[in-house]
Image (cartoon, helix red, strand yellow):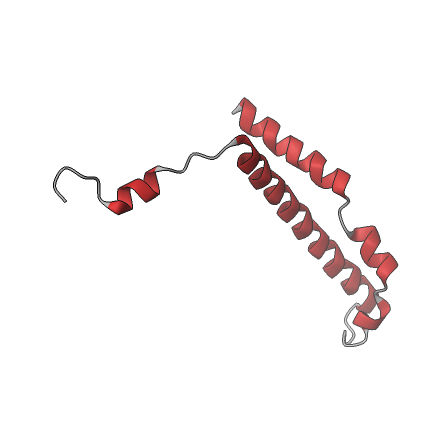
Amino acid sequence: MSGTTPWHYTDTMNTNKNAYEIRLNILSIAHGDLMTVFHEKLHNTKKRMVGDQDDSWVEDKIDDRVISDLLPTSAEIIKRAKELHAFVENA
């Protein structure tokens, strides 16, 4: 073992990512950001529907149209990813 690098150094030191992996990570972060916004909007929509009442019935009132209107589009996710990429490039 003398003269060799312990395994834990080689595993942790080799973290270089290629361009595709970096873009995928940025896209994943953008998707996560916008899904967080989606869940907050959905929560607020439910709160507006029920107010201070029992909310057990609200799940039946949220239809696919409401959800699709709130969900981020692919174009929005890509736009957010470009914003994140620009931030990283200019930092």
